[in-house]
Figure 1: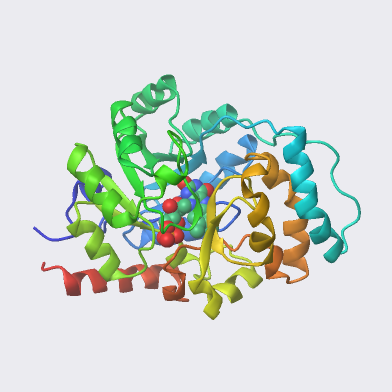
Figure 2: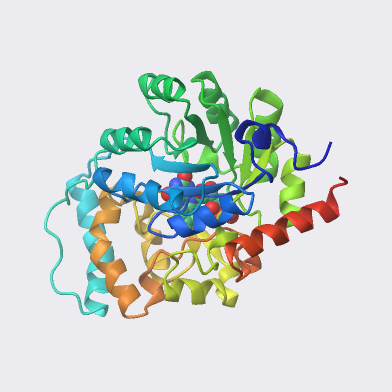
Length: 356
Ligand SMILES: Cc1cc2nc3c(=O)[nH]c(=O)nc-3n(C[C@H](O)[C@H](O)[C@H](O)COP(=O)(O)O)c2cc1C
């Protein structure tokens, strides 16, 4: 028995139990997902910020580069409705930033919710990836049944034991244990975000001992030692997001790349400042400015729409203080390597730790 033979690799027929985690906002490109899958790992395509009618094209782009399996990922949630008070607080936070960036005016009223999640799910199922992975919630029973009918495996995100058990009860095939170290949004859906701030070690072990299906550990895993630790704790695979953000195939913007390589990469925090939903990013001015009003900001996805023009301008003007610099707590260990090379390095490192 070698470390490469796990319930996860068996289920998907792949070589290594190493997942490139989905990263929205154009970071996990089709080229990145394809490179990882082609190298024997498991790539993921994040589709939450993609219009339903554009989803088939993204999935086809991966298929044009590899015939190996990969995951298509969505946020599964009910959009929140902001109160007048929350919109007012957002204006307090964002007006000085807009003025600093030379942006005229501000959106009046809540912006429209851009994409319908049910339409996105229908597009993903029609595209027929090997795996439909998701976060922020559990798809309706009918969606899970339809996945089974079409032979699409499901993989859901848990940030607590309770969420892991809820996903297993719903019949989700594989459970991602997303520890509090993870970069990007918290997947929490069943309880307070604070209750979902469990470290990857504790969470992986708890879920792995209680559910009868493959567990994928995620959060702060950056090298072969981290992957070996996850497997030792009972995970069937490890998912790495931040570790792939410096790969040339990733869509990470230039200021974000620079910050990931800077000493500030070691200082991350969970913030609602960019999207209204807690997410981990490198600490910058927007996070600091939002601290007094964190809990009073409009909910996801309203806040992410309200900050759309700011993000675009800050990237264009090279102003990382107003960019969501998503990163996990291990960011300082990120390596700038082509994805296939990084995957081979990770596999060699695990092999050096875990006996064959
Ligand atoms: C830039 C970025 C974007 C992310 N976007 C998504 C997403 O669209 N869907 C999702 O399920 N998880 C998303 N995540 C969470 C990752 O899938 C994963 O849980 C996390 O990267 C693991 O922690 P690590 O970054 O420390 O490796 C994102 C993470 C990052 C860093």
